Amino acid sequence: MFALPFFRRDLPALKGDKVTLRVPLTNDYRDWSTLRGESRAFLEPWEPRWTPDELDRTAWRLRISRYREDYAQGTAIAFFIFEKSSGKLAGGITLGNIRHGVAQSGHIGYWIGERYGGRGLMTEAVKLVSRFAFDTLRLHRIEAACIPDNARSIRVLEKAGFRREGLLRSYLRINGIWQDHYLYARIADDPPGAGTKG
Image 1 (tube, rainbow, N blue to C red):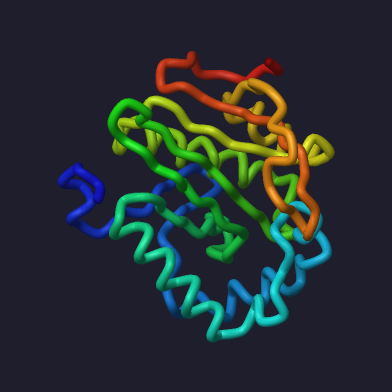
Image 2: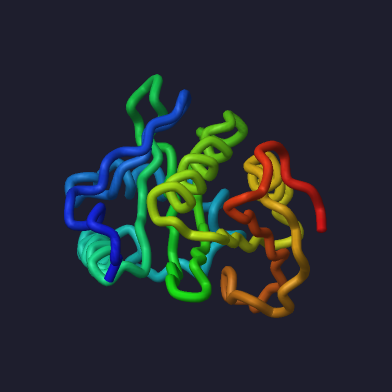
């Protein structure tokens, strides 16, 4: 469970210049399934293999239940990313594997719809979630991992102030294949500005 009194209230939206982040709601299904469906070829190389029922309403309800359970247990917070100018769903970002005690850390994972790529929306979303993790949750360290071939994700992380720390061999099973990942991290007292390669 989250130890902070903050989590006994509804989680507020996180607002930036280009995006607004809020928790996913059951009635987001249509927008989510449409965006994910039209972006499938764009997303599949960087994600776990899609199941045959990936975009079905039943799978969506299970996903929402898992988000709520993780939130209630204090282990993760999922946000949907909305483009501020249009109000449209653009992607998602999760702060997961949240640990307190001696670790005080979390792990960021994210996706964006193909038509919203390259607009700086994800970089701002990562910065907003990082600020939330450090200032509200009082975490000390945030990690993110990305496949070495994912140049877009590397740019997002480095622009958001993350630093490359090393290579995790055969780290995650992505699109059916165990793949190496670069490990990136940001520490609460890192100076603002672009990240650098480790």
